[in-house]
Length: 382
Ligand code: PLP
Image (cartoon, rainbow, N blue to C red):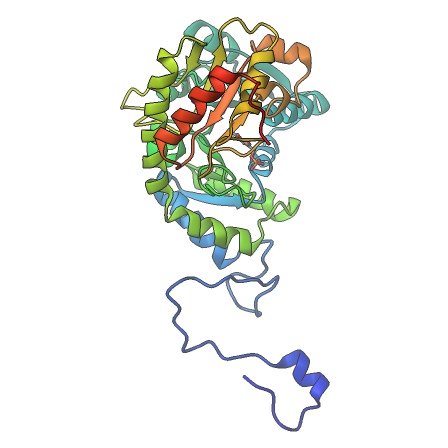
């Protein structure tokens, strides 16, 4: 609607707007707006926005829960879950989780006087001794980060129901994605995501999400987002929606590339161990994109560091689950927020290498690894 001729230019500059009532775009446009007209159900972007809602409805479809909430980052989603705890509550967690989640959980619990029970939740005895009547949250990642160990979600959720009936089972499903693993269908109450990883796939946005089995839990998370303001930017949500269109195709290629690289690494004499999750076909349908390795005779991680430097087709840095391959040393990267003692407690040292496998030709990635494993530091990047 263009303003009438009687208006002054300065008013027209402020008020001019095109009518969109007849427009029918094939792609949802970016609703880069803070507010909506009075009476519009979206109300205010801190509350809701069509770009968030489109992704949330898709996530709810993929995970099969009551719904999803999109957050400004994966950490904001973790923080919103921790916000469900009250002083005096109790929480159980597996210590093999992303370093920043570990730090946030430990510090949050210490500040609020929440008793935190760290345990290897994949082991029946440890799981049972970590669960108490007043436990309110059970938090884990599966496959774990680092080491890609598997936690049986159904078995864990059944034990929680018996021993800690008031607890919410929270699974960070970032690395498996809902295409390969659906925690809510296996008994979890909340599935968490860093959308900055496989969902984005291009290392160009930071977003997070939570899906919840029950409406009441979903509403608590939504309310927390509204009042904390940990809300996404509409453009980032739009970029995420676009990336999700290729998620399945990207993952398929990453799984195949990873399979080939895994078989190369397992046979290489310089590689001492390779970490990859158990794909049982029931809980975890497939897996790819991420693996960890240790080199032979590398107690201080010098060889790991040299390998990371020598690779040319793997960017060294925090990029992860992206179309382009990357290499990182978790000790000084993803788990930097943990103290040396905490890292030692989970068996993490400088010798662990993380590879993120992208969409390049597997042959080229293998040739790069072969050369770098031979060079181990002599062929530095230009
Ligand atoms: N959860 C997992 C498993 C992650 O790997 C990460 C980040 O690496 C996060 C949560 C945090 O997500 P974000 O970086 O989007 O805040």
